[in-house]
Length: 391
Image (cartoon, rainbow, N blue to C red; front, side, top):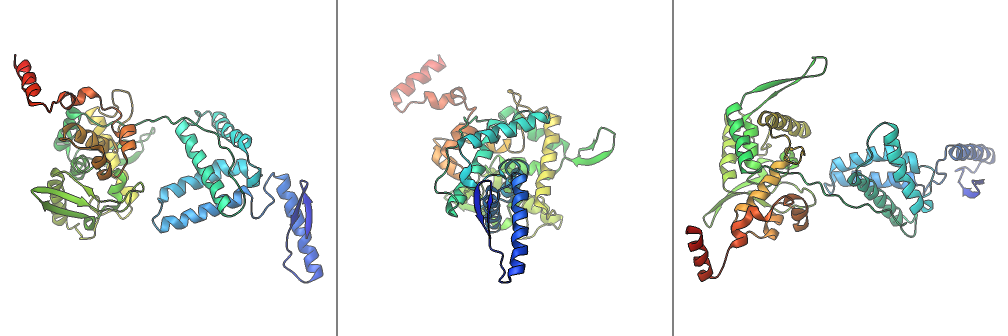
């Protein structure tokens, strides 16, 4: 059957060789197309925005199973599709969407938030929407729905790096926790109803020391098993070699500092004593099969510790979180290591030189490294500088 809808010819098969049955199916299809037209929905089965977006989503969900991308990404994409992208783009064919329509979309999502008395979307959040749209169009090009990509709006990147802890703050953090292990706090809602009990544990203390000596991300805690940890004593260097699954597209082994070895041995000893240890079990919170919940429990403990130590916010008023310990580890290495190059540090921390400079070392000032800045190779100049300091 053929029909003209919105000045476009649409062809459909009735999937029948019986004339009467085919006529009934043709009428049903025509009414369905009219209904879509009235609702401003795409009338194409193969090249509509919704169709291509759903095909991309299906492919990404398959890639999650193959551990190529994270499950959290597909969940965020699904939420964005349902709440923002599909409501706006459902009436369009992919090849109809141009720069003007894309610009209207970003106005639409901001207007929608303001109508709900919410703040405008942050630039970095808008960039997530933009990235999602680009992926949909690229997938459409792969499927032959479009021949070329449209011109996309651009947004200036605003880096908002988390901050870590300085030496005195870090000392205050773990020394306070050492004396408060077992401390409990009741969390209630505004009506006084009990929500949960939060208890500071030895596990959090071990985690703080471990993270600041291993550069790992909080998400690594969810997946790290004892089978991913090897104690290595090589060329008078004692360290852990961590081979946990890929994070942020990086999969190379992570080498820890020596102090992490002692912490790990304590963790294994405690788990064996509590009959929690399994050779293929989780390093942290092994009794929780729900790893997202396990990480959340540690985060709640850490938040409580930050409140007790009055370290929840940094000097710029930004909140500190568990991730701040990774920033602390990287900053300490840059300040304390002897001639450590950025490439070695970035590879070991499963990141890049650019990310180190833009985020992890953003607040590292030259004054923090004044000794290296003033260091001299020439022994005569070095000797003269030493004499000046003594005098």
